[in-house]
Structure formats: structure tokens, C-alpha cells
Image 1: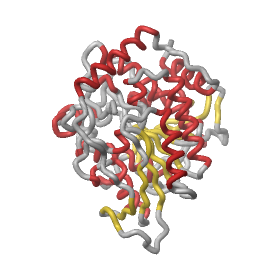
Image 2: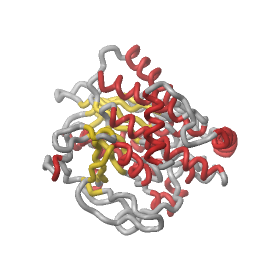
Image 3: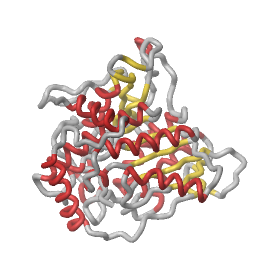
Length: 381
């Protein structure tokens, strides 16, 4: 069964209330339960709690509440990655990196609320939103950024169940008027505390979940950014610098890099950082801050080509993005149509970080992106 077919079936099973182990099998399910025990023993619990980061932000950090300018309202939700567990200062958490970057891009203050919970599963997103509405009635985000899915893998949650909860959360946020950006499930097969052969099992499950997450988010009106083996060559070369003391959650440096990767898509979702330019065939505009993501090459070949954004049926785009770190997938049109016979049309693109003045991060310009294992930020809560 092809990966595209598996991703489609997981998404379809989620939509129709199924919970099957599509393309995984009972053996894999049992191994993942064993992995959860091993990973938690090795990682331990070295951190007390993430920083509280709610507040108003300008380009250089926190600012007084109540400035005359209307703020951009940003919501961060999900698991310990979204909360920034392991960062040594609030300014290094992904939420604050994105908030300050948005303030710079929009020339407006950003009102940030972070409701992410350490150890959260995708099924916990609904509860996080319930608490937001109870604590801040009437507050509606302009942008919601999510990082979730890693704990679903380590807890062996069935992919269709996980994706169904994600779909519900995205649709709820869209009904509130929020643009939604998801950082997909990272590739847990590249995390050192997880031993072989469970790393291979984790990689398979993680990437299948990430692809299915992308389908669900795009179908619900949001966009996704692949956190597969994000900045893999850089994280691999500087493992001690980019990971915190538990060797599992990112360090402050690692979290800043994650925030920088998510920021361009967050800004674009709100209409900042793009120059509208109609692409051939009625496809999505090609932004000035993006470079192309080529189609997956034959096994063993490097991916180096650059060109216009690709437009594919969403399942194909989702599988391509799951292998290509930093790739954004969002809905688009072809010839004025949202959908093909194979599903919703989606564009895939690779945006350059806004915080680097349009320059690619270290390691991307000179290092080919391959399928070789590399270290990745992850989370077992």
C-alpha cells in the first residue's frame, strides 16, 4: 500500500469515525507501547514547568498592555513543544519567537495567549479551547499556531482517532475566525533516547501521522508546516547545542529555530510577507519569501532543485511534505476549482525565515536534504 493511499485512508477513517490501524498493524502498535515506556525512562522529567508567556509583544519583546494600535491576537496550543518546555528563557519559546516576528512583520503589537499543556495529546485540544473560552470569554484569535502529535505516537493513539480530534479543533478555530497553522508531528525515529529497532517503527508511524494531519488541516481550511526532521543537518551536527538536558526536548537554540521556521507561514496566513503573483495554471500565488519543494526523487537521490510552487492533490502534497522539513502545505485552486477527483488542490512551498532577512538557515543552502536519519525536536510530555 503506497504512503499516499495510507494517508488518504487514515484521513478518511477519521472523517467517518473509524479508528483502525491503517497500514500499521498490531505488531507496530505493541512496539510503540514498549517505546513509550523506554523513552520516558530515558528522558525522565528534568523540567518543572514551561514559562508563562501570555502578554503583549512588540518586535523586541514584551510591551505594556493597551497600546493604541489594534493588536494581532495570537493563540498557541498543543503539547510541550508548543509550550517551549526546556527553553531557558521566555524569549526563546516558539510562541514568543513567532509573536515578536509577527509584530515586526505587521508593525502591530501581538497579544499572545499560550494554552499548550505539557504531555497533551491531540484529543486534549478541545479541552484547551474550552478552558480558553471559560477564562477569556469573547476573546477570539486572529491566528492559532499548533504543535501536536508526538505524544499520540508515544502513547500509541490510533492515527485516525488523533486526526479526527485535530480536524475538530481546526474547524472550531476556523469558526472563531482564526487562521490556523500546524507544525506537524516530528519524526520520532530520529531521537537518540529511543533505541533501535523502535526508531524505525517510530519514524514510520510519525510520518504517516504527519501526512494525515496535513490532509485534515488543509481540508479544514488551515495550513501545515512539516517538522519532520526539521533542520536535520544542523540539529545533527550540533546535537548538544540544539537539545536540552533530557536529549529529547529542544534547547533554547532549538526552539528559536523552530519558531523561525513556523513564523513565515504564520505571517503569510495573516497576509504579511507575501507579494501576490498569479502562478501558471490558476495555482496559488508564488510568494517572494518562498522557494520550491520538488517532487520526491527516486530513492538515493538528493533534492536540490528550486522553482515555482508545486500544486498537487492534498494527499500527494502531504506525503511529499512529510519528508521535506520546513515545507508548508495550504489549500489552493487550479482553474478556479478547489478540488480534483483525487481531493482538494494544495500548494507546497518552502518559505525562507523572515528573521534572517530572506536568507536560508545554516545548513540548508549547502547541505542536500536526504532521507538519512537526523536529530529532531520531539516531545514525550
